[in-house]
Length: 188
Image 1 (cartoon, one colour):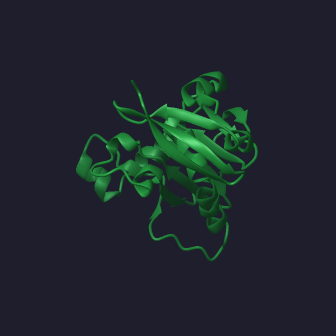
Image 2 (cartoon, rainbow, N blue to C red):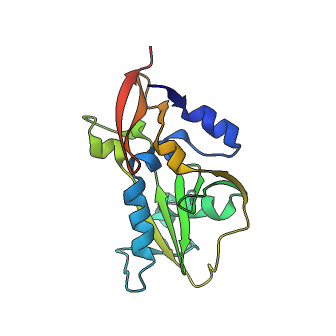
């Protein structure tokens, strides 16, 4: 099995994406695309809605000079200038965020790094993602980004490797065109 370095893939792509974001997209591709599909339904009612302006966000107010996790993602997405674009799914990538404008909603899927895992390493902890939905009448469309394109269907047939923690790297294992599994390999 030939393993591709996610870091090198991103370097060749030429934009700022954390390797774990690409890997989590591959591990959760069907689920992530499902979030975007649900958000396209006019009757979709997200559990929590966000707006772009963090002024009235209680968590942001408690953090004083920092934005909450959700508003950090919103801020990143709206201030990015160069982003990756998966032509197959019409989804965008920047740092830890996978995102798409769906009708009048911006859906962002935040990909936390597995180095934050506490306790046992489980499949659900490795695949963990956090979607948020922004419904804000002031947000009509995404900025006009410079796009660096790729095809996720090509990556679904590959094994990609990225740093997991000091001891291990995470490697994706293709199962079929829509599913990938994973394993850990020692760094030394």
